[in-house]
Length: 189
Image (cartoon, rainbow, N blue to C red; front, side):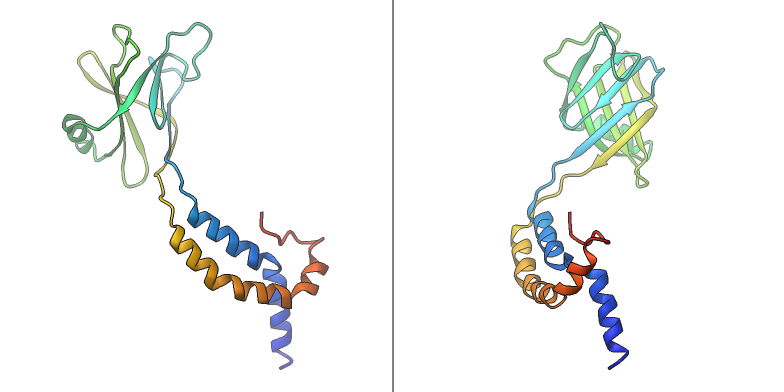
């Protein structure tokens, strides 16, 4: 019994009052739907600066951040065509997004289509079609997180099953938590 009490004290100190908060946070994360995050920006110093986002792609000459008076136009996101998919498969990439001419006029000599693909190591390839064929544009910054659906039933079941033991644990260790709270940030965000 003497060995059990210090272990229980250490366990209570390490988990603190975060039990109920962490269970609530887990339920909230399961209940929340997450939208797709996609950003691919070409490196500075290329002929075309390309910034591909979730819904559209912006193309400017030179600097990806644009600049005063720079000519910029957007391409709308479309589905990946069979030609574009085979082009990416030839480079061991899976399609992520394709952008094509939309309502903005495309200046002559500028890309009228952009495709983005990634391999299994999450390395991306950004290609523009200008004139005769596809040309790769080196990527300076790339972030891609796929959309994540919500799970409200799983969140409710998780909260119903885990909140009562978490509440009981927090109430049992309340004096320890109050004593340690000023020195250790044990509350959930």
